[in-house]
Amino acid sequence: MTRVRPEPLNLKLVRWTPRWVRPQRVRRMLVVALYTLPLATGFLNRDDAHLMFKLLAGFAWLAAIICLIWLIGATNARADMPDADLDERERLQRDQVYRLAFINTTGFTAAMFMLSLFTPVFQSIPSSSLLLTLFFVALPMPTATLAWIDPDPVPEN
Amino acid sequence: MPRDTTLTIYNRLPVLRAERALSRQDLADAVGVNVQTIGYLERGDYHPSLELAFKLSQYFALPIEAIFALEPFKPLSAALYQKGDPI
Image (cartoon, rainbow over the protein chains, first blue to last red):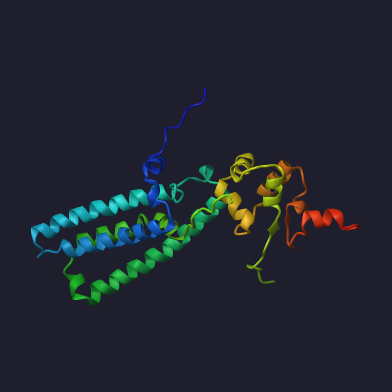
């Protein structure tokens, strides 16, 4: 008797994703939001910020997480699928995306490091926020890269 | 010898599908790939692996060189009615 594998969470996200986020134009907007919202929270969550701004920072993080969930769904979770669940072209694209994601993450991290050294505003951001932002940059970068470069499907005719 | 990254592989997949009234989804299901991969193959944006080329050859019951080529294919009708030209 064959054992039925439970559906992975990332495939459930694909089914829960609204159709309007699937076009490349919308995916790219979500990628921009995914990476600007955590940066904005860094500014809102400064030590000397008003409580209202700190609450807004929490909502900004929630919005960033929703963007990530929608991006995973809009790309059919292909950035995280194992080899067995992808065809040969999708495996090639996934591997290409990881190479690009490594380059993007390195560049982003270097930019943030330089800004934190030489920009007074960045120096006032708590280090915990910066570390969380860096983690949030690296983790979804393959999905974000795939969402950015994957063209819209061409209709049959 | 430097690697040629501008290689173009021509294909007859749209013609073969039309002859057999197949959609991209039908062909994708038959050879075990995503429907978008068939689209990429037809537009020449992706080159098939040897395994996929053999699967397509087996499905259409044609040699691989009747489906894929390094030179543009002649129209089938022209090749059929011009004497002495192989299809």
